[in-house]
Length: 232
Image 1 (tube, rainbow, N blue to C red):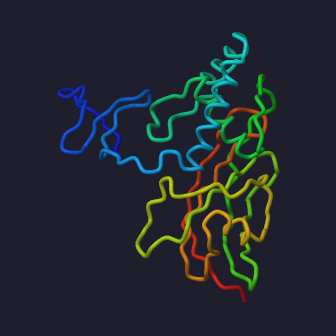
Image 2 (image 1 turned 90 degrees about the vertical axis):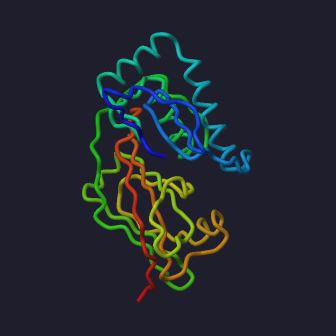
């Protein structure tokens, strides 16, 4: 999919031509190959639909004053669409985006009706590694700040083929941690996601999403491609 920026001579294209679709949504114009729907009711897709539905219901349950507070927050601390940095998200959009990640992290549906706490800044990663140590697959992350004020959600892929580098939506949710240095064995969790544990030499894609604990703000989304190495 590509984002379209029109010139002064061309202001709008819509419809499909030879399998290529031009369309517009709230966050801009796109052009992409017409998708072939495959397993639209897959378990992972259904789980995301459930989260979005729960977030939408949560927004509808807010009072007018509570919705206004989210809209004011959206205007005073702007966040932007992932694929169109010039498109600012509405109060509804940031409410749903943050709550979907928070529900995925917490494993339950809890709605924050008020915005509290202080602003946090992105905490950069000083080291990210995956090491096979016998029966263990050790996933290690070190942070520069590490003040535990942020939730970090990690998504991981199956092994990539040689030369494959585009991550897109090829990752699945692994777990979350506060932004404090950690080293955990992910063999069981990874096998539950993808069927087999990774081996030394495998290239894995990793997406790390930092969200604030008390405010509806997605601080940072970072992507890596990491080679699994053999332990000493």
